[in-house]
Length: 462
Ligand SMILES: Nc1ncnc2c1ncn2[C@@H]1O[C@H](COP(=O)(O)OP(=O)(O)O)[C@@H](O)[C@H]1O
Ligand SMILES: [Mg+2]
Image (cartoon, rainbow, N blue to C red; front, side, top):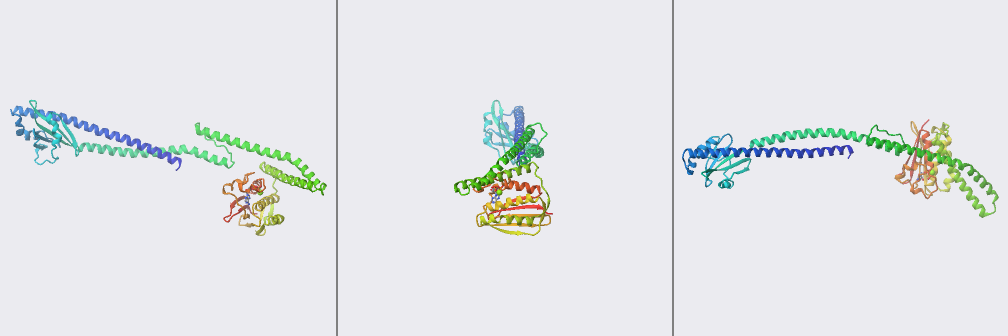
């Protein structure tokens, strides 16, 4: 998942959680406050109602038993709106029930709950909520004696309506708020991620040896990071530059003594003829100095290519002829490795290029094909062309290149793990790539499905 998406989701989850918490708290608060108000009112109302009943009893000079006589009338007087009034005697038998001033024979508001009423006989209130109704009972006392019970029944619809509308308002608000936060967090996430993306791009560029500095115009940590990055790039570039200069200097210094060694060793060959031991040593010396000379020449060439000091003499070059000539030159080496070149060369494919440099590139690639193929193998060498490009291909049936090394083998001195047993400097492909690039062409390496390596060089046609 992308970092920006993750950030947005985190914001959203945090928002929804806080909204849920706040919502539950508010709704519970409203409910609690509503219930408390209802209870308070019920206490006040029932206090004045029981007072009214006892005064009526006293006024009409009726004793405790008189409750039965006046029950219906007081119940009618006391009931109002949706409030139902029930009056019970001492044995908790219902004497009457009334709604909005009308006596109600049928008790539509639920059967009396004697169990709930019990505390009133001890002179207490009894309050409970059941099936969305509040039942509030209080004792009717006359001269310190409980003579009956008065019960109010309230439907709690209004409270539920308040809660439902509060909930709806809250839901609508929450959805709006969550949307707002999502939009907000998307824009924040974009802002946060953009500089990180720029840094990632710069890192990738650095990995590809492009050290163009990255500068984020910010004063925060990301700005600092971008500056450190650019510094690092500069240092790396500097380091590579110095390393290359060092290699160039050393190779240059080695050239003169090497020429001397080579010259003398060649001279010695004639001198030690007839002395087998010495001849062997001198031959070895001669071979090694040739090898070293080749290496130094390669190093010097790559240094000159780096510095742009190598001149390219562009002319019209017949690539087909050049490849055929090179193959002819390599015949004896191929025979030594018992390798057979299969030529698939279209005639007269021409390119614009430096003949000597192209020859060197072709030689490097064919040399690799020979070196990394098993004896008796076949190497297909092709030259072909289409509208705008010329193609030179070398396909061998050798050991191939481990996939993780495919890109690295173009780096100078890099040699794949499976090639270490074969002699080499790791400079051939680096030089060839430089040469091909100078010709505005490109070079690609691929492993063939049935084993071996295929190199394809593409050059602009002329
Ligand atoms: N045809 C090939 N088959 C297998 N591996 C190859 C082939 N060509 C190049 N390589 C790999 O690429 C590396 C670099 O090649 P190169 O630059 O020519 O250096 P060198 O041949 O001196 O080792 C080689 O060491 C080898 O690991
Ligand atoms: Mg090579």
